[in-house]
Image 1 (tube, rainbow, N blue to C red):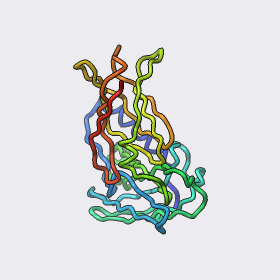
Image 2: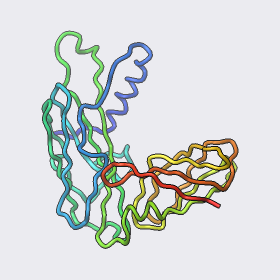
Image 3: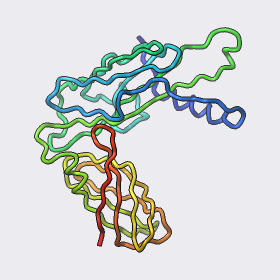
Image 4: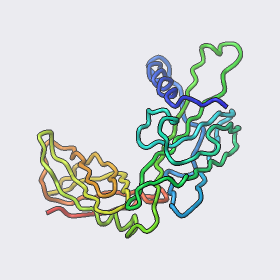
Length: 247
């Protein structure tokens, strides 16, 4: 079966934005992934991801992994995983199980590796009168996959609570800096910085293992001491509230 081009969705979505000022229409992905993230423990043979077509038409679906470079052709990435099946048809109101298998090639042993699982859905070609003037959209859904080596110290929950925070002044503003000294990836849903009765929004980001992440405080000026309130995302896609003080 021929491979689909993952960049095709970009051109189609751009066309949709151009037409949005002329006519309004509802567009949404019909393929739904069973979760918001995938955990792949090193100790398992493979993991399964369930897809469901909630639309009214059959769809051709391609699945692949990337390493963060989401515009690179999947065949050029050479990641040590196999997706089965890589391309499949999913009928309306039916499901499809996708199996991800690690081939055993070396990945870091001292930390989690972050990859991305992609699903591209393409509707069947329209037929009949007016088909040439019909706008069709190809949708891509992309979620995180964490490859988790065995023997890592601590836990994801411990890592979130162990985050160290400080405020750094730069020429282009103030930044809240999160320092992750653990082997776990930390996903943040949101963060705010409070001081002297005022609360400032923060452009929050995820923090990689043994790394720091600077997040801009959305304010012209703000104090350099206060309280950080942040929301993390756990292995199940749920959120958890946390608080830390900066002096």
